[in-house]
Length: 246
Ligand code: NAP
Image (cartoon, rainbow, N blue to C red; front, side):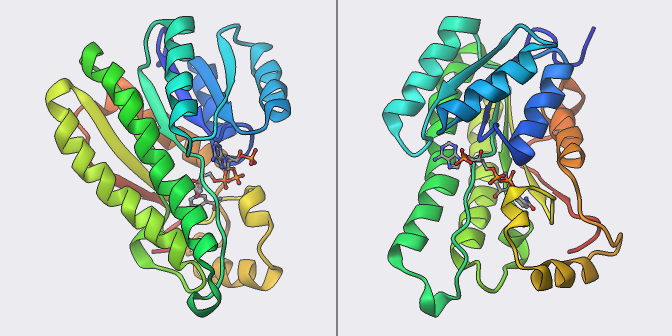
C-alpha cells in the first residue's frame, strides 16, 4: 500500500515550483490531489500531466486571499472526495524592496497572500478536519522567517508569522488529532528564485555549506514525511531544509 493511499490532499500554488513538486510526490504516493492556483490554464495543464498516472486529480481555481474562493475550494473538494486529510499551504509571493522604498501595496500584497491566505485555508479546512478528528496541515515558511533578510522585510514578516501561526494552531488542533507543522526552505531552484540577479544567487551559494541549491524534490520528500503517518507524533514544528545555510 502506498503511503498516502486513500488520502485527499489540497496543495495551494501547485502549478509550478515547490507546490507542483509536492503535488507530484503526493500523487505518486497514492493521494487524491487537488491542484489549486489562480490561473485556470496552468491548472488544466498540471491536472492533465498528473492524470496520466493518477485518475484522482482535480483542479480548482482559487485565490487564497478571497474567503469565498476558499469556501468554494473546500466545498468542491468535499463534493468530489468526501474528506480532506492534508492541506499544504504553499502559495506565496515576493515583492522585494528595501524598507525605505517599500510601498504599502508591496507590504500588504505579501502579507495578504502569504499570511492571510494561509489563515483562510487553514481555518476553512480545519473545520472539516476537526469533524473528521484527523488531519495534517503543512505550511511552507522560509528560512528568512527565522533569520531575516535585507530587502525582504515584508516577506520575512509573513514567513515569521507563518511559523508563529503554526505553533499556535498546532496547540489548538492537537486535541482533535490534527498535526500542524511548517517547512522552512532555504534556496530552492524555482521560478521564484530564477528571477533573482546572478550576483544575489552567487552570494547565496557561498553561504550554503553544501555549495548547491535545493530542488523541489528535496522539499517534497520532507513534505511527504510530515503529511504521512510516520510523523504522527510531531506537531508545531518548523523543519529547516537549506543545505546547512542557517
Ligand atoms: P513559485 O514558483 O512562484 O510558485 C508559487 C505559486 O503560488 C504559483 O503557482 C502562484 O500562482 C501561486 N499563487 C500566488 N498567489 C496565489 C494566490 N493568491 N492564490 C493561489 N495561488 C497563488 O514559488 P516557489 O518558489 O515554488 O515557492 C513556493 C512556496 O515556497 C512559497 O510560499 C515560497 O514563499 C516558499 N519558499 C520558496 C523558496 C525558494 O527558494 N523557492 C524558499 C523558501 C520558501 P501563479 O504563478 O499562477 O501566479
